[in-house]
Length: 64
Image (cartoon, rainbow, N blue to C red; front, top):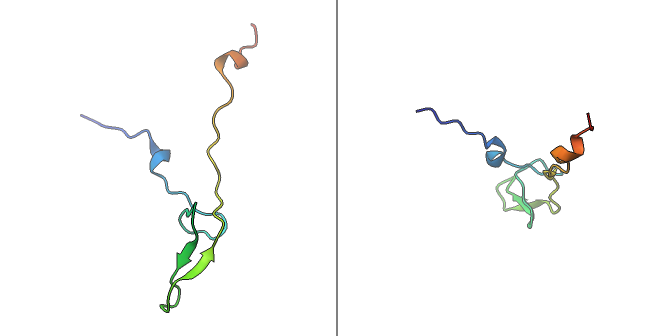
């Protein structure tokens, strides 16, 4: 039996476009850079949202 995973995008990690770290929506990105405690790296997570397809097969029909 062969199993193929076609849901690749579901397992992909989102990254913040501001700081480059893992997505931290709803909170601050805190990092321990020098070993002396955590520092706020980024407060506004930004990443591309997946847009839904807005056309249907009927919209693409040219009447021919």
